[in-house]
Length: 91
Image 1 (tube, rainbow, N blue to C red):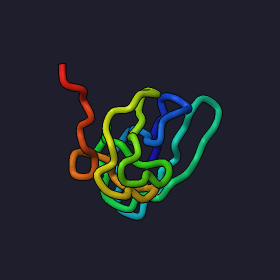
Image 2 (image 1 turned 90 degrees about the horizontal axis):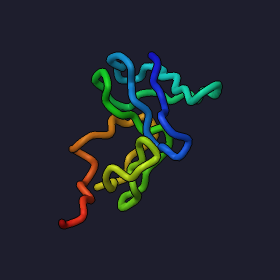
Image 3 (image 1 turned 90 degrees about the vertical axis):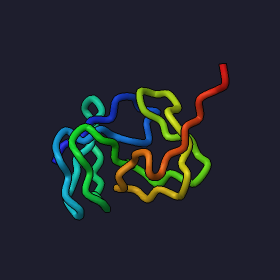
Image 4 (image 1 turned 135 degrees about the vertical axis):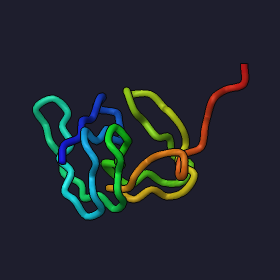
């Protein structure tokens, strides 16, 4: 399975197809590749953690904070609403 890391600051990658639990996922950023193994099934175009993200730590995609880890998120885990809190500022 392939995934793409959008910015070098990101701690998640976007899976380009469905990843099955236990499947090897090659995450690319430019000419570099890292490999993680899916701890959960990850639907197409969803996020997978490319490293451990500790509870309270920002989840980073596009080089920007998109939420806060609600729990410790192990490397290879599906990253979505079940383990990420919204961190929008009040307007």
